[in-house]
Image 1: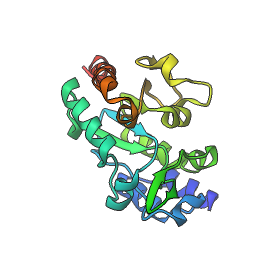
Image 2 (image 1 turned 120 degrees about the vertical axis):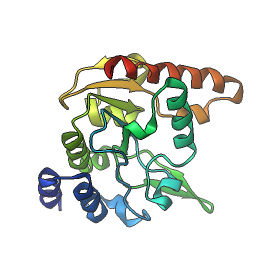
Image 3 (image 1 turned 30 degrees about the vertical axis):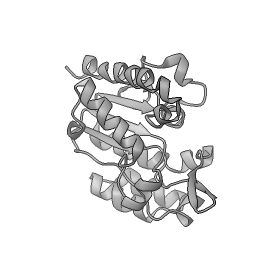
Image 4 (image 1 turned 90 degrees about the vertical axis):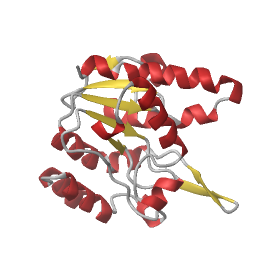
Length: 205
């Protein structure tokens, strides 16, 4: 499967090709429990790619990235930062929902390194085809997938880092982290996230 996946991703000529390949991918065990694979969404000429962690529960059911609570935070932050979501491409480092049961709920489980590695070919294909000016890494899993295990989010937050992907990487938090802070701290956390996203315009003028 690994050789098949690598070849398919390397030979993909369109985002539709990548989406079809992701839908068939059994490169790790996550596909067995997920409803479906969730590829990226956005235009093939987007100048900015946002990379998150993985689909959540609502994304897994809908088959689209960033449509749940974290997606709504991202949409609001983009609007306040003056960035039109229709002009960017959003995807995840891992394409299947990693979860564990808690009662009747499916609770998010951080993807393992081998699961991140299994999806790397698809992420590389998305970046290759779009050739963005900037990649925005949303949270630790995205940073690890894009920049390696030694880059820390909080140390590098708001910075443009060089990468091997042909574009600089802007490091910031995942929007879901804002939903996890105490209610009285949420506005401050959101404003900080907006400030990070405002920096996108420096690279896309």
